[in-house]
Length: 285
Image (tube, rainbow, N blue to C red; front, side):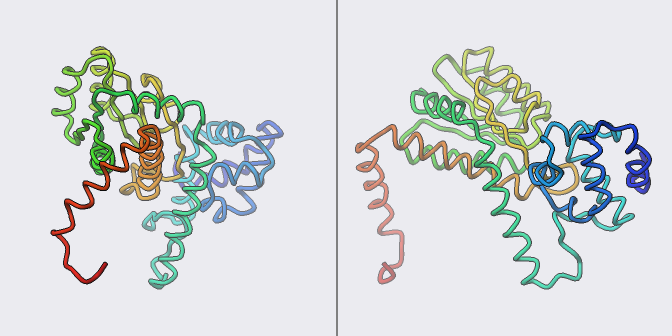
């Protein structure tokens, strides 16, 4: 489908859609620019339908999901203009830019809070708290999140490593054993090299916690998938809010594990803090 034909295609298809899908179509045709800025949850709520209904509507339009739909809608509206996240415009002032980026970031974090499955979160924390070793795998911007996660878990006294290189985490996965845990991080859950490493880790007997997109190939092969849907097309630009969501989930996991360790952790953290005292300029405490 050529992007410029999307809105006309929606208008023509209204009579062919189910009543619920037609509600989504009417909303898009009435306020396409507003829909472009909204999350799947918000669009479903304003159309008074379920989120799966919105996704079915997108598929009825010949697209594979809401992210693809938003991309085509943006192209249809912009007609070749640079596709930027949310409603950011080239004419925005630095203050307007900051407001839009930060508001979207805050909205995404609240959306992620609503998406996290409490039972899966509990199981993930239990696996990490009992792990002999924890390894974090990610590529690209997810590799940066993996490095941040390694730092957090290292400070908890857990044997942890982060591998942002596909060849390295592929080799590392073969050396794991039962009792080890891999945390695989991927915005799309479709990265072949990462999926291959996770398969090797599972074959070695390790458990795998994934932070990834719902229903993705990575989620399907994970022991505990922590699935989050972030309205950001990672095929177009470097993930921004997706990265924030991943970092927030890592924070939740690390705090959960810290609470399982009890008072002993406080003593270790205090020793670590004292070890840094001489590395800071005095007089600014």
